[in-house]
Image (cartoon, rainbow, N blue to C red; front, side, top):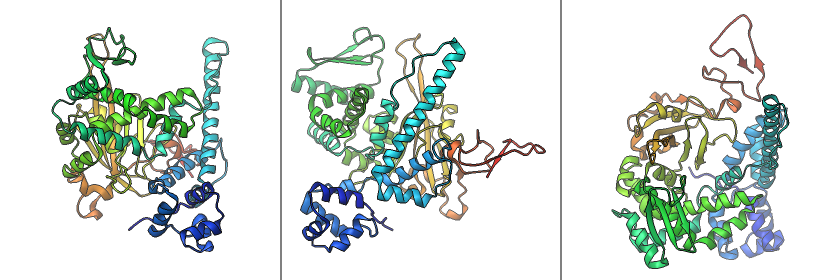
Length: 481
């Protein structure tokens, strides 16, 4: 069943940008003013014919209507209002949906306020710890929002898909015949030399810098790569250089539109957008999407055929959200041994908590216990009743010498169980008779999870009343209501 589209705020922005009244706007679209009013108020969904008329008459990008902000906004608002420091009452899901649908800009402003509150609390805790440990006050950080979080939210609300960079990278990949080439690194290195007079050199690390894996000197036109890098990573880093040389104007336009609060956030996003281009160059959209469908998203086969790493494959699958050509909507995350989420994105209704860790029952945490490359497959159900196929594995970043420490990460990739037939991993996981399926009951994290009978709960949910029975001892020494 097709999901109804309520995007009155986007329609209203298009009208206001054209400086038209609802009457004039309706006349241009050959609609009645009352109908336009209902569309802008989200009383009625926007039909395909209206979308086509808006695109034809005002040159609107139809993909702007497809960005799945609603579920993300509702999830983020639910997390914010579950925090009793921010709000002590109870706000229902329908109220939050109403705010997200009718006033999305206001909803984002509320989330910015909550983010500021969180950071102020963390700064105060930092000061208190410093006083306890050192007996003196330490100068607190002045920023209320982390640059990394600014950039993470930017990609979060763009559906992790950047159309102009993606299509530019795909065009260049087709021109070079790059897809599934047996030696993509050499092909890109030779192209850089022939097209931009850039020389690519391999070093043991001293020339790029002791900790650098790559350095690029635009003035001297020299790229130096660390010899310890896998070939797939070398090709990816050359793709990053190519993005800088060929698509910097596109990247600059995105940075201007994002209007980040700090220069640091802009610098981080510039690097992230170059990385996005590199991933799209090595795994061009249409060819990779077709290969993924043919292989039923078998990650090992995709890596073998494409020459990309497992991490590159997983990340690219999470970006296949091109309008009219969308792939399976995946979530993707990368976690270190301490449970810190290094990367995260969800094109699904599965939303990561912005704060407070993740669910211990989620199989991504088991990945470190398994041999590298072995996939853990889980059928998990969230508190909202939506079930998912969850994949997890671990990867190790190679060390350049005996004295260097290897870095190991867990990768998580998953989608809603309704797409199970498109995943080879689900064949033995989910029975054809869905009544026999018994998914693991997982959550987002303990601080916002409503489940009251979980033996792995670390602490109570913020919006629940804590109950302790002094006469009875259970695995978890409290209950909630």
